[in-house]
Amino acid sequence: MVGEEPRAPYDRVHLSELFAGKSATDLEMLPRPWYAENGVELVTGERVVSIDTEAMEATTDAGRKLSADRIVLATGSAPFVPPLPGIDKPGFFVYRTVEDVEKIRSWGSSCKQGIVIGGGLLGLEAAKALVDLGVEATVVEFAPRLMARQLDEVGSKLLLKSIQALGVKVILDARSQAIVGEGKVEGLQMADGTVVPAGMVVASAGIRPRDEVARASGIQVGERGAIDVDDNMRTSVPGIWAIGECALHKGMVHGLVAPGYRMAEAAAHDIVGSSQPFPGFVAATKLKLMGVDVASIGDVNAAGDDFDDLVVKAPCAGIYQRVVWRISDRKLQGAVLVGDLEPFGELSALLTSGEPVPVDPRALLAPPREEGAGADPIVCNCENVRRSKIIQAIDAGATDLAAVKKATKACIGLRKLRAGCDRSHQEADGRARDPGRSLALRPFFPLARRTVRSGLEGEDPGLRDLDGAPWQRRPGLRGLQAGGGEHLREPLERACDFRRA
Ligand SMILES: Cc1cc2nc3c(=O)[nH]c(=O)nc-3n(C[C@H](O)[C@H](O)[C@H](O)COP(=O)(O)OP(=O)(O)OC[C@H]3O[C@@H](n4cnc5c(N)ncnc54)[C@H](O)[C@@H]3O)c2cc1C
Image (tube, rainbow, N blue to C red; front, side, top):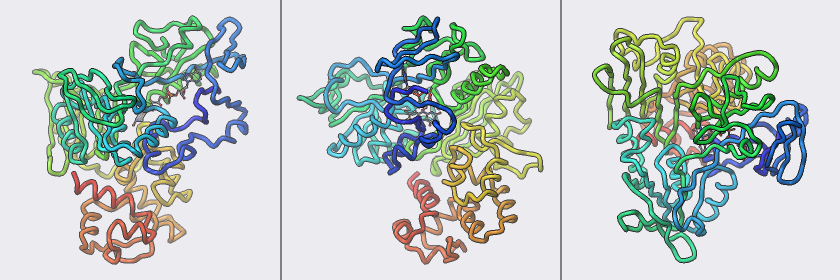
């Protein structure tokens, strides 16, 4: 395995957690010794520059030659850098790697204002990173709304309001013209001549698949880039596969991690001679954008006479849910969820299965009901983690969210864990032999945010912490952290978010 970055593979999706105190080692996908122990030679800090497809030999920029029977290209993407005058000035950054985070952090520590170019998923992640650094952030977006592909108009507006409430400025319909400044970044000049002052600019205006090795090696790439693959992830050259963000499957490049994992499975099956073709990917994404939970499923902008929709709106609680289906065959077309993602699993399963929406579609947005004994819903979509796997993790001794996540690789928060596992918690709790363990679990699962909030406000909801002490004895979030109530930090923070929303 050859990677050009100077470290072992890490979880890029959670890169922003480096700004919140995690270390690069915390994000590693596998501990470094794992590779040697499992017969994988890991070469880091070297870039493959070409592949001799006849001899099946790859050459790195350090002159190393590696031969193989099979080669998988998983070269990902590079950030798109808008061709603006001034991008060479100190204070201009992209946001993709641990090294980018280190540069942004070191520059941001002496910077008051920052601009992010791009109001998509990564742009909002970058803006959140600036906020975490204490830098006043302005997001500059070319389109008339945020996340136009993933959210409909109302959802975008709600997201905009929530983000503005966090103190982030957003300029929509904005055309950047040049990065200005004497010797370093001092602002961004817009097409109308105005200059938005800033000591740093982070470009997050899209990604470009990294197909340069494929091009240099005569492997077929699409007209607009990315490596052409079939359903088994085979490229045009026998013995060479491509997966992830560098792959072009049926005209689509998928810029998310979940389809990348499915592609990896398809390639692995093909390589060992079994078959599990990549079925394509229905865009169903859950994101946490600056603390706001957002989900986008299918075509969220489907509209017209042939479509019907169901909308739930509670702006004061930061909640918006819309489900759209085709009237003629009652097939789900898309859904947007903001603030409350509880129906995500059911809606994405419905979109994938193509089954008709229920006669009373309100059932789709209703709170989850107790399911039959055989039901084993997917709790985390990225990693296909089912409820049963989480139960196993709890049974094996995982006593808090971090432990459950570590054991299952599920990318979930408390809300999802609670929604997916209320029953599993009760089952595990009932079976628990160790009373400490069940106590430790208790704070996480059954608490409604309302309950936590009332706890914060000093009422006594009968809540007990790990030591069995009543909630009201604790003097709020700060005191809790200082007092070692680390296990309650996340529910409290969520409650605070809720209050802000
Ligand atoms: C800040 C951030 C937040 C994100 N959040 C989400 C999210 O919430 N949900 C989601 O689904 N996705 C998210 N993504 C996208 C997700 O990270 C990508 O979809 C995923 O990492 C793609 O995996 P990959 O293996 O295809 O490519 P990459 O993760 O880019 O890995 C490719 C690796 O190959 C290396 N490489 C490239 N060319 C060569 C070469 N010639 N020789 C050697 N090495 C090479 C690169 O340096 C890189 O290390 C986020 C991305 C970022 C940056």
